[in-house]
Amino acid sequence: MELIRLGIGDLALASCLILGLALLSWRLRLGIESQLLINSSRTIVQLTLVGLVLKFLFDNANLLWVILLCLFMLGMAGYEVQARQQHRYRGGWGYGIGTLSMLLSSFTITLFALLILVGPQPWYAPQYSITLLGMLLGNTMSGIAIALNQLTQSVISQRGVIEAQLLLGRDWNEAISELRRQALRSGVIPIINAMAAAGIISLPGMMTGQILAGSPPLEAAKYQILIMLLIAAGTGFGAVAAVWLASQRLFDERQRLRLDRLT
View 1: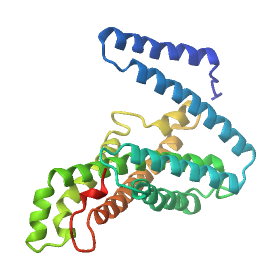
View 2 (view 1 turned 120 degrees about the horizontal axis):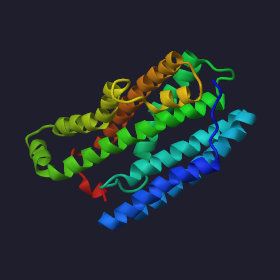
View 3 (view 1 turned 135 degrees about the horizontal axis):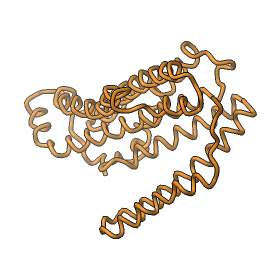
View 4 (view 1 turned 90 degrees about the vertical axis):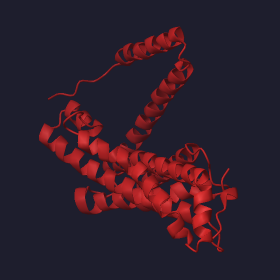
């Protein structure tokens, strides 16, 4: 089936829907019209720039350019994880915990998919490497951000309980174990719910995009299954790494709770 190409006019008409929603927000005094317009504009600009960058990379498949773009994506994802925290870690830890966790999870799983599962030639082909890493980073970032935020909020609200357990002789690992489990559950529940709804309630984005582009539905379903499994693994492993690093940072070498390390 031939790909139906969209024109500027089509996108302009779609933008009118956002303008209508912003007008409705203003009329109902919801106070979200400015955010809606700004973020819609950001989406348009960012995706247009990404499209131009990817077009360049597809035409010039160079490992160095792919690595630089991947590192840029990782850096921005690390910033977003930090920005979504109500209580951030002081110093470089606030940025480093999320970034390192995504490096260990998303990058490792993307390499596994490229080298073992998909096997494009060359293995770093931007069509596969950038798109796979982008989907993994986006979902892993959300899971890590939720888990870290849940952990720090729970520790602050239950400070007395934790310190009482430390006074009773428990080490920091035991004192925070239940809060850590709650944080991990919070981080992975969104992807678990997404997997439960996939194909029954909703058609996931990658599968929809491939079908619209003319791919056979069964082939699109196979790729979507692969992506969902990789995302679930990346989110889970990333959340475990982030929560573990964050938990250790909350205590010093004398097993004392150090909330002064949070803003």
